[in-house]
Structure formats: structure tokens, C-alpha cells
Image (tube, rainbow over all chains, first blue to last red; front, side, top):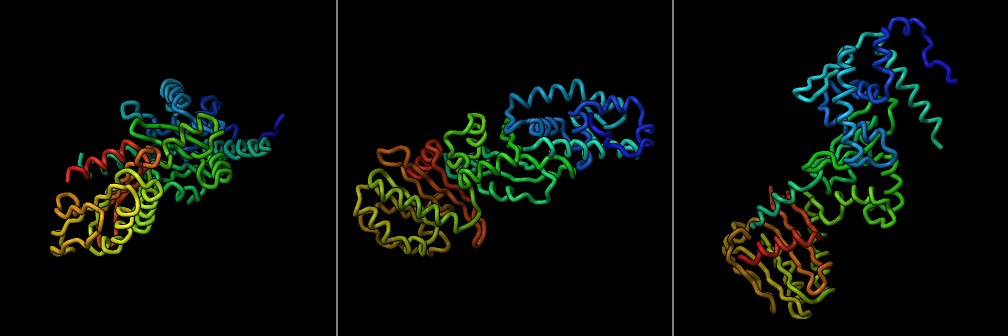
Length: 123
Length: 240
């Protein structure tokens, strides 16, 4: 069992359950990570980047297109419903929301934690 | 098809590359400068993976590769992963987009080196047709002996194009090039720096360069080993 990456239990209490559920999926977390650096992104570009991120080596259009479908039909509506992103499906684009303190802290901790785990798994 | 059309077609068919990484300016950005229509960098947040390279063409996403893999391939194949035959087919498909059949450069010295390479290739094959257009009389004069040798000492059919009415040439006749056919009557020729070799009886040797002068010492040009593009360039020259 992993130790909790969160030292501050108050952070955990301050985050609503719906937000946890929205953050429970790796693709959804990565959408949020990308929006930390970019104010807005076309969904097509999100799909490009996520498929590259998930790839072991290379990603081809056959890997990428299902990611785009999954984003549009599942993940982006969920993130938007949880208030974590703005999703304009007509413009096919997502926008950063000003995330409140605890959510942002949780996200950054998750990013740190995931990169540590990845580093430990590397040969 | 005119040379302007050939240049426009080449530009439109080139892929765009975006590197996503937490680093400010990954070294790989410069690696692809002569291959891609554009090479951009987009930031990833600190703590995310080292990064990846995404290739897009006219149809959108064409493929992506982690920078870790890219570096390993570049190290293994001395800068040309597209030469690596034992590569997984997926990698080969991605690198085919970045292959070495087409290079683009804005630098005169790159274009000069590529020109010498094409002349050298024609010399070594020694058969077939070599066509070369010179914008400036001084450039032609500097190469006149080379073209005379190509024409007289090989079985090459050598055609040299030169626009005597180009402002820089002031109506002067071209220098004499024994054995070569010299076409000195303008048209589109005055605007371009062109070489094209049909490979003689070896199609794998065909190559061409087309460059357009943008300023006093600035050019936009490409060179290619792609048979379709070489054929277009040769056809454009033949109409003069």
C-alpha cells in the first residue's frame, strides 16, 4: 500500500466528493494538468497529447482517435459538470477554470505523486 | 506545372511538429528545422513526463513519439532514425513523414552544398539529363568549368538556363560552356535557383533543388530525392 501523498488532511476534507470522482480517472487528471499550462486547448489537440502521453513508444492515429471519442463523450462532460473545466462542445474546445485552492493543491500533489511513481517504476 | 507551383506544393505537404515538454527549449526543436513546415514548443507542467513530439500533416494527427525514444533512436542511428531498417513499422511510418527525401532551408550555404551534391551525383552517374538554372551571371561563371566538364567528359545531356535580362545580369551574354546547351532567354528562370538531375538509367539517383531569392542574401528553397517532385521540376525547366 502506498502512503498518502497528502500531508495535510484538511485539503482532503475541503474537496467535494464529486471532485474526487472527477479526478479518479487518469485521462481526466491529465486534461487538468495540461490546462495548468494552457488557458484553452482544442479537443483535437488534447487527444493528440493524451494519446502521446499514454503511448509506450509511439502513438498512431489508430491510438489517438478513440481517445478523442472518449474525451468528447465521457471525460470532458464529467469535468465540466464538476466545474473543473469549461467545455464548449460547439467550438470543440476546453478552457481553464480558476480552480479553488484545495482542488488545485490536490491536483498538483497528484501530479507530483504520479511522476514519483513513474520514476520508481523506471529501470 | 510552374516552379512556383512546385514550391507551393512542397510547402503545403510538409508536416508540422510540436514538442510538448516541461523544458523551456528542448534540443530536439532544432533537429527538425529543415524537415518540418513549423516546429513549435508547448509547455507541460513541471512534474509531467519528459515530453513527446507530435507530428501533424494536412489530415491532422499523424503520430507521436516520446522524447526518450526519439533520443535513443537519434543516438543509435547518428541523427537519422529514418535510416534504421530494423525499426518497428510504426516508427518507420512516423519517420517516413520526416524522411530525408525532402529538405527545406533558408540558408544559402545549405543550398550551395546541396547544389554541389547534385552536380557530383550527376558526374558519378555520368548519364542522363542535368538541368541547372542560374540567377546570376557571376554564379554561372563560377561554375562554368564544372559544367563544361560535366558536358564534355561524361555522357550527360547538360542544359544551363540563364536570364540575360535579369537586372543583375544587365543584358550580358552567358559565359561559354562547351558541350552544354545554354538557354539565355528569361521567363520564370530569372527568379529561381534550380538544379535537376533525372538519374540517367538509375531512378534512385534522381534529385532536384529549387530555391527562390527573398532578399539580398536570403532564400527559401528545398532539395529532394522524391521522384515525383524531381519530375515536376524537370518538366517545368523543359518548357523554357
